[in-house]
Length: 145
Image (cartoon, rainbow, N blue to C red; front, top):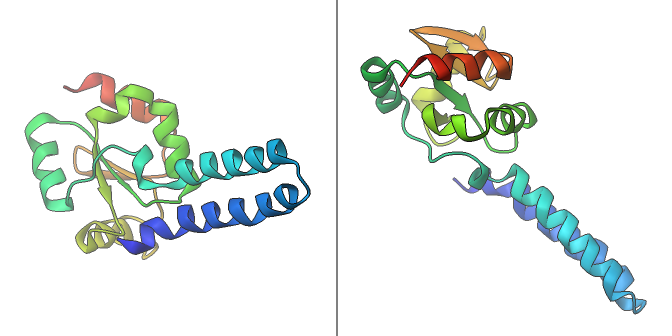
């Protein structure tokens, strides 16, 4: 779990470090701009942007019941963030599995991606799709639930 928060914490610390220079020079507006920019970046790569993750076994069980896709992701992944943002509110309808929290999810991704942990990996009807187009995923979410 601490691995998921490393990038946001480092970005926050970089923002504070970057703001120190303008603040020492009396430019409080410039310092505040650095802090705000880095805080926004930290929020974008944090796990808070994504729906609450479930375990791989639970996600697959739920997907079998309701037919919704399972999305395997990890915090800090730019492609995962792109998918999440492009899905908008529809993202809540998918079952999200954080592979850094769930070793079984990471194993499923490695199985689908020739041994690599390439995310996002989306499983629809038992078939894995590595880094699919967000429009395609949105269409899959629209057909279900």
